[in-house]
Image 1: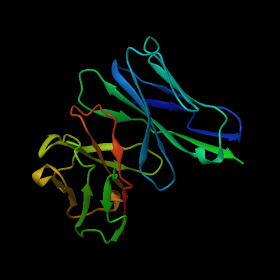
Image 2: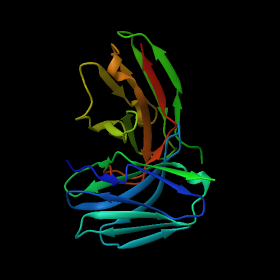
Image 3: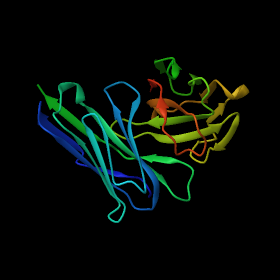
Length: 111
Length: 115
């Protein structure tokens, strides 16, 4: 399967701490995207990182991509209760015309 | 700009009944996606349209599911007849570009419960 796999499946931290989620995949990709889903809502796009990029930032979010290890990480710094959500990585693999979502990491930030 | 609109937000039906979901994508977005999301899982693609053409329907269970995107704007996803295992959230998304690998904008989803 070309599906990305997130790790850990669930994460619980205190407000103000950093949260790191990882995504591993199996085939070559064109890009990798991270999405957030709050309970009962649709997914919201966070960051897209292309295969020739190694790191991207957006506010408190930092995404890295290591194509040699076929892995990506999402770091949320100074977490807030509002960051409580499920986070999905989505891989756009070369040779395909679709983006495949992983099962997600459930983040719970305690106030 | 207005986001992706879906209706209804919730639907409860008995098995073997038909059900339909409607999606209005973001204006100007040529590509429209229908996903199925089971509890605790990520979205799984059912069908992708580029304008009015279904370019990827390989994961759509065609014996009971059908979709259409008339005039390349709004889309309808239908299930007939519904089965207990169809209980899930049905998400619609749209993107500006084609190819299925662009940033996608999701609607709030329709939560279906089949009794």
